[in-house]
Image (cartoon, rainbow, N blue to C red; front, side, top):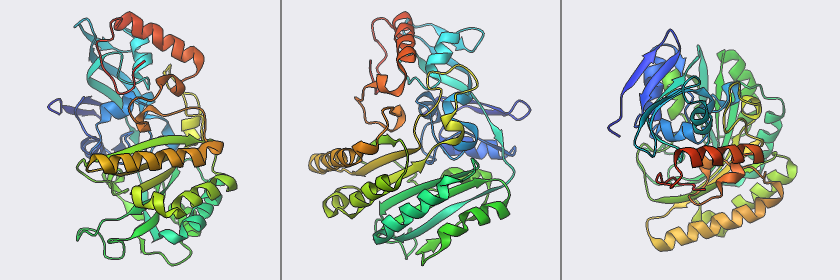
Length: 364
């Protein structure tokens, strides 16, 4: 966290950041220049870890994975050597670190390409959790012809009874659509209108500043004890909607899981990256994440068991590929890549860390 250096080169549209810089800090610095950073939905997440594992955020459908935005890195390899990694000096390491995870070198700084964004609309629409099936179906229909500048995220949340939370949501279980649109506000209003039908508990969708994009999902600023895991859905068809609705309506699962998220992918995320990268694309239409509050061992066991049941119910709709960023530690990293890419990553790993001195969440 002390590696917090942050410089914006507005002319080149590049941010040079230390490995401890958070998404919120980068988003604020970039916004001062009318630029947006390829970060995720939570301001407290470290940008380096996000980018090394792929990185899916509000800019993803329009501009691709955060890992594809990596232009260069400063690293220390397992032999203790400090190296500058870019396309001209260390092309193999650059390839591996663009979405291959953090097992190949210790990253101390990186350079990320930024994107100009003039107008942003974003916010949350929320209903009681009992409306989850209807909301998921409306989102499925809206996503069929949604432009790449629009991203939809459905979240089923158990909201704690805290004074800082708006009264209509406080202490309730809700289903929410968090949406973000890059571009003219009038286009955003038109695209989101079908989702605004029905009686919402809250509706905060509207124009926001570019820097606020990373906070619009309302993720906590501080870490907490939890367990979670993710998977990819091939698509959000009617059968997948029915399976997800069944998960939401299962009272035993609801008691264990404080969040079930269904995040829209596609667009630029599904097209091959413009430059060589370990994670070139995401071969799935949607990402699912399930998690729960786990302050002790018993709660953790309950959450892990519930997640296993969610995975079982969604298995008929699950894609083969996994995203390392959303998978719990210990997942097989080979499933994040095609066979040829994984073979190349193994060769790069053997060349730079043959004794496996660098420990990562996902080994291999």
